[in-house]
Length: 296
Ligand code: SF4
Ligand code: SF4
Image (cartoon, rainbow, N blue to C red; front, side, top):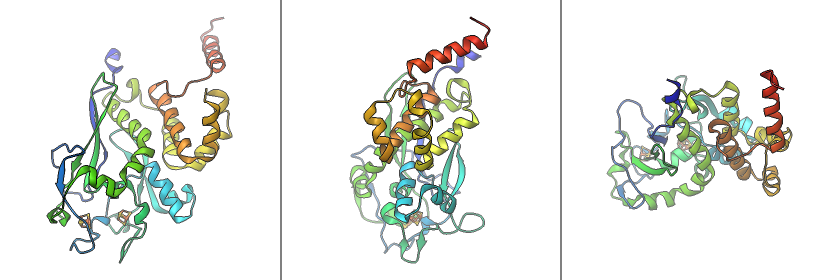
């Protein structure tokens, strides 16, 4: 019934999946919080060195694409064409970019791997940094606040779990520089989580987002150049009520641009108040709708 389709569902959503292999279900059913301990180390001496860099299923986040294209000295558009494949993030039915793996079946070595290891290590994707931890977030129906937690993935090929290195989740996170990535990706992860929590009902408010909205989400997620062109060189600022400081910032600052874009996507997808239409635009839209319905 239509009335049942107006409430977001309680949901626990994996955002960073952290499973590299295929067959088994290696996620341990334990929620790990910041002070919880786990045993793991990865270094050149392990006999599985780089085993996890073959056939890996890595969804690239906006922060990944920014950092990797900068590292390689290419624009995001070129990076996308050369190093990624388009895919659907199935939990929320959203288009994303995945890191291209070698081999006709995509089970070969990662493009960035050579005999010495990862050639883009300082700017490797967030999924590679998190491994063997995953990141999930949970939001209960009717609650504003969501809660992040980690989970541990134990794949049989990964011998790092046998290393004698007990550490807290916090220590691992700090060593991997995860906070910087999470800060940039926060708004994007919020969108994934919300979409997943609506999926069972067919999409936000029971409706699947249009193909155009999904296209915009892909642009927001992957290409700051196209995004800036859209925001700065269209009537975006004439239509939306954005503070002057923020307008100036998005012209040159990629992180500010992404923050605005995530807020805008939330307003488009979930009708949140994160970015508001200007009064004048709203009045015109209402007048147009009335005229379309034959009202005076
Ligand atoms: S980016 Fe680096 S760490 Fe990640 S899968 Fe590729 S080679 Fe491995
Ligand atoms: S220990 Fe695990 S993470 Fe490290 S190289 Fe081996 S398979 Fe990859």
